[in-house]
Image (cartoon, rainbow, N blue to C red; front, top):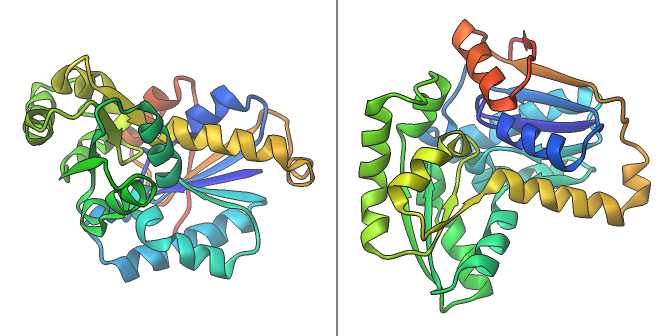
Length: 261
């Protein structure tokens, strides 16, 4: 199975992208809804959570792991690689590579949680590949709670998105990385507020494309993955709103199962 975890239900955007690009593959998802958001936590705490989440997915039969959380990807990727002997994917590098291919004016914007933005991970990875690219980042701490609460069409959400994007808009970026897997749920609003001339990059679709390419070139790993079009969805706290938002993201009926962490 393909194992995917996130700080909440936003990582279901990665599940949806995997379903689109790798139809039929079995998946297991864990959303740590009881401890969301990770973006306000210390690096040590996020690493501990990521290790626990990965252990759970492996116990459930996962053969590869996707960290569908930019915050965890920015601080915990190396810790997971050191502890676990199986393929592990993070969502930052694929988004960086796609953004560099996309930008025309070498002006890239990044939005993410405070932890992701403060880590400077996107700037480091982008400038390591091309030091001439200007990177402008903005922390958007309210967006994850808005998605988790299902405030997807509220006027308040539109105003908050506009305020967060204003500093990037005046910098005249031509490419914007959604540095959190919750954010694609708000992509129509984000695209409207940042302007139609800006290309919006989703880390969810970027990592799905990377996993598809990896499996195509790694038949020994691909052969270990079951393909019965079955997926299981677990969360560490379950509310009716989580279920409603999850169905909206996946675009099909799903059942969330509550497990304590």
